[in-house]
View 1 (cartoon, one colour):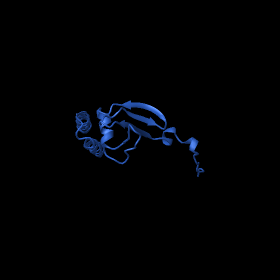
View 2 (cartoon, rainbow, N blue to C red; view 1 turned 90 degrees about the horizontal axis):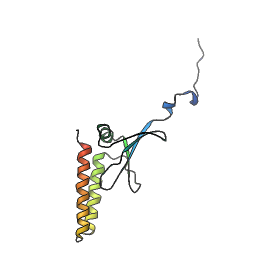
View 3 (spheres, rainbow, N blue to C red; view 1 turned 135 degrees about the vertical axis):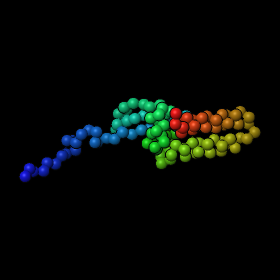
View 4 (cartoon, rainbow, N blue to C red; view 1 turned 120 degrees about the horizontal axis):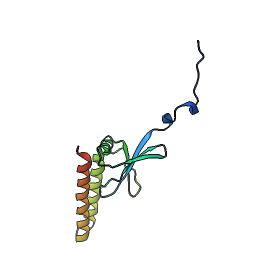
Length: 124
């Protein structure tokens, strides 16, 4: 009977030590910057969020989303993220209801949020 050999951590394949992670920044207008695919700290590639693979990763909640101001939106589906952005923009709209420039910017932001939501949630 052959003796059992134990493998030390250095003898394991490098792929077993790290797993791929995906992250992207989502701006307050709903636009998503390119998705970064990383192996550990190494950047492997970037993916357009509106590509079939990017949409698939976003819908499966594989992408860690970070807002432009540094907040993590972990544990939220892409649908929930867009609902959250709509609610935040609606609250901002209510802050200055009599300022026409403010209202126009907020309404433009809501239109952009909806456009990105449709682009990322639909199957092209």
